[in-house]
Length: 397
Image (cartoon, helix red, strand yellow):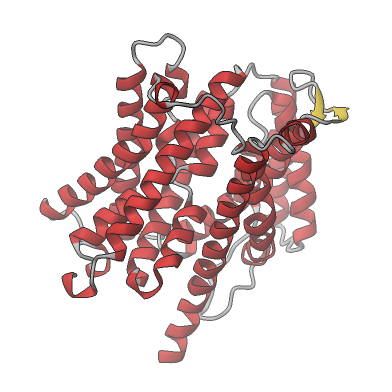
């Protein structure tokens, strides 16, 4: 029994360890981007490299492909493929496989997306055109947050890491739905029909017993191109493709379905290459002239307050209410102070917030203002959550 239990826990520990390391690499990449965008010796090279046209024109609305487009619209589709695989595994064979397990993470994630949007809209309501950014502070960056928890060592109990991961996965579901529903351009029905046909072929192949991941990766690339042409954001192809990859319930210690194998193969590339590349390409914002007045402008302030204030109110408040009403129990016997620290860490919205900000605004000045807000809100949330958990002793649990 003990061996079986260790076998089940081991993949989770491996996941958390790699996610933590990936989060630390992401932090380094973001810092490097800030330096490159502000040092006189590198600023022109940094921006010139990102906007270097590499061709060809894959979709007319996008124009010639640049390095920035390849990262945001191409490589990030692989990130969303991994997100989709994790969501499907958790729903069918993991921590979200029953309503009892889903209840508290779903409540916390829903409130943790709604409250930041409300805070953002309250602050930006007087400025026309800023309402499009309501979803920017809604999502949590799981790699960044787990990376901060890793710095705490044994002061961050495993139950807290597990609950944070579960909330972030539910959070990702909401973010994907928001991108698909609210940040989609004019639809090309012919291309969308082709995407549906590719997806159907992948589903049929799975039902017929096709188990080679190479087939599903080829299908993913074809689906990505069709979705790119359709007007729906191309990265959504990753989540859709993941739904077609076969999975079967795993015995303790055995994770040999196509989905488990593909997730295991993709994770290092996404954690240590794709997400840090995205962070480097999108976190670089010039701080020249960025004084208090610029930080307190409605757009960056709305994003920062949504992440730092909205997230902790939404997540901590919803967990407290669910426990007091008898809907759920506190995760793993964690203390209220630990849960508050976790709620604050959920305000780290780096990767998904930057991604949604790039979709919400076409004006480069607005995108830079979003970056300032995301960086400020995420840094405050990371520091606040770290300090609360660092100085909470396990005896207070």
